[in-house]
Length: 409
Ligand code: DI6
Ligand code: FE
Image (cartoon, rainbow, N blue to C red; front, side, top):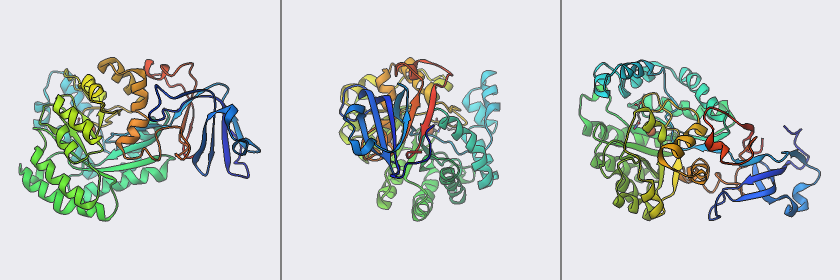
């Protein structure tokens, strides 16, 4: 779409309907008969075409959108996209009646992904991850958060994070990396969780931070993973290193992970099926985003839903993400994820769309750069062949993307 860049480097998309998703504006921030102008990869104007300054709209590379809708490029703010192999065999075992525990005892679970990842070299990891990234991008995704957490030792955590960073060289997409070394206990730790947390805090995080391989730090606070006290030690170190934190919290039980995350000013707390009112209140006070992950809920047939009404009542912002991972959410469609968030948890269309744009940007600490169609932000756009925005949430397995623009291209 569109020709070569105009001399001025200015590009304009006109004759469009905009869902700007601007913060503090009611609903989707809709502009009928809208236009967007971008220069050097940044939006310089987004609004009514009739009000576009002449300087933004003349003698430039102009695209007629023929009445199509434009939203911000979608943002998947919680993925474990970098992994090797898959766990379809465990899926079959579970379908045959095996429980998670039985699967884990048979060598499955997170540890089987750790084995596969350790055996793969960095090039393999990148190559195996690209098809998943391509699937996300094909639906208009322009920013993806990618966690480590299947390496679980210094070299393999770094290998994962380097592979994640390399995705941004291979594709026109923004990648944000998160160090999730405190994800699970590796076999060589022989059951000693405290010793492993020592390794994470004393060695893995400082090294990863020194090489600038991670933009944030995450942990898994759960009976089957790490206690609130152990996560607090990880967060203390992250704070000392100047890295923002996020947390897998209250997914399978209520260890008050949401409140813990909030007490460290976390960017987000994620999953949250078992979060209580005190947790929601703490998140609201800290400005911690609730990241809703319906893919994992669906895939492991969880029945406890996240307390969406509590989040609304307390004014907690909600993001929506795939949690793409080989064990509990082998999902690479943010459009389907929105449908799940609406159908399973009762999110409105507006909440779903905000969840994969503005609130996802907030959950990554990127709201000043992405997530809405506003001047000054990255010109990351998704242009859709739809009549109304609800179609993006309503369909299952259909992709109405017309064009995807990343940094103006
Ligand atoms: N919660 C999850 O659902 C995934 N990680 C996490 O902390 C599970 C990841 C896996 O099973 O591979
Ligand atoms: Fe996750």
